[in-house]
Image 1 (cartoon, rainbow over the protein chains, first blue to last red):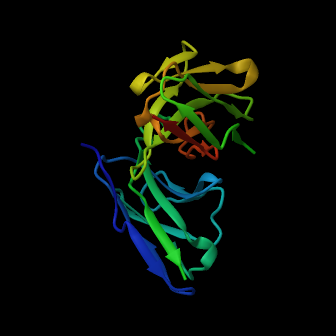
Image 2 (image 1 turned 120 degrees about the vertical axis):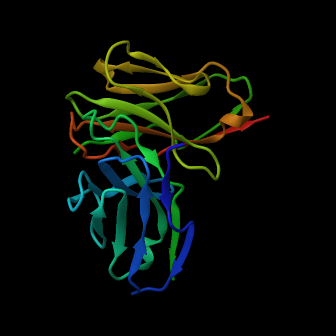
Length: 115
Length: 115
């Protein structure tokens, strides 16, 4: 069964801390994405990557950065966490061979609370 | 900018009632359209998708959606809902036409089915 794995289900951090959210997929997908999900706002794209070492800003990249050193791993970094970054973070991946986002596979999410 | 509007944030229905969730998008070019579902405590899953061809698409669990290009709509329907359909439903649009830009999601509709 295909899988997108996010390293933590729940995370509590303090304001100003550096936070790493890890995501690994086992489907050899080219494309990987980080979304945040907030009640009443749906899913908003933070960053995405279509290849190793490549990254593109999504709709709300401010306060975040990403790293894609290996094809299967896509990390989201909060350089200095703030309370407004408390959210559910969702990682997703898709195949690049069909030239469309035919199907996004999502991880279970990481609920981050910044105190 | 591309946007997706879901008309209802909360919908409450009784079992066996018919369901229609509205979705409109703003992009005028070629689009691929999706409905995702998130059951309580679970990750997002693809319900159905439209790429081309027959504008009436059938998905899992008895759901269907109709693409009406002239109305920029992709409404989700089910003739008779079940208690297990309680979930959050997201409409999403891919207008990248072959790129890996990620999907634009609506804000979601929280559906509650009462026994």
